[in-house]
Image (cartoon, rainbow, N blue to C red; front, top):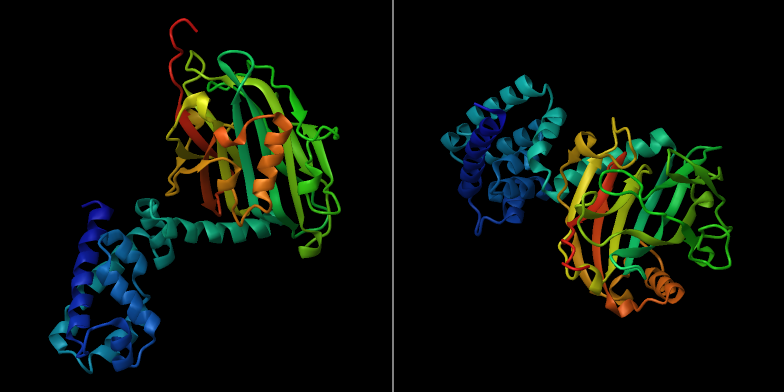
Length: 397
């Protein structure tokens, strides 16, 4: 029998045994706080067991199961009020579960990692592991950020069949945890779905008074020192110079560019999808990935959220067989139209930032649909992609 079926079988038996004990505890309504009070136990422990009993997915039940010491404490207290046969019903499934853990994982922590394969669509389960990875990566790499922002504004170009983009991106409250640490906050490239660069992606700064992409009014003071260097072919790297460590050296670095005639509006031999991407290489608490698209460009769309591993990838934006997809529970949400729907506590002055983009480009912000993907503790290295299928080119165009 495959592992999942074994886990489900054991957990269904455990759920029945725990339910029998809770039902037999002589309380008025059987509520967790009443059971905890009668048994003189911590309310959190009884609540956890009660939640396990109410959970419908057997695999998720295993994630709510208390540890061996807590279970023993619960059983010792319950046996003073519950018949021995009701208590005894739990021993066999507990032994079977311990055997599963011993054979397939060796310890409880590794066993829960195995279960996460089937719980990846449960946000709480995934976020728990990603939070731990964030803390570890922050220590390993010596840097962390509160927010990573990638926001793409898409508008029809003056040339038929292609579109322009305005890009707003950066980091909020990036802290260095190590001295003399330069850090690449972004790698930037434009290509077709097959990875080839066919459009002339000349970038012009959004700020007309600047020779670099920094949006000074939205950055922290003193102004972050940003260096732009050539990376892989066709790619630019935005690199923060070393700075002070800890909160005193925290920086918010927001930059913006306009790129004209950047990509096709329609499906062709090189493009099947429109993809807006955020390359994740900095440990951060939250990723905010927005696609802000003019209503005339694609109409209302339903983008998918895809996350691809950056390990063993030969390219920044992996293609074909190198694309190893990571399971995530998060989805793209449609927020509505215009700058008014953009504010989020993760990005200070976001509405003002969007209004600046529309002022600079001359685009009518009220006609833009906003699609957002928000992910807590996104995995690194990875590429987070908001993707939707392109339409066929209308006849005669």
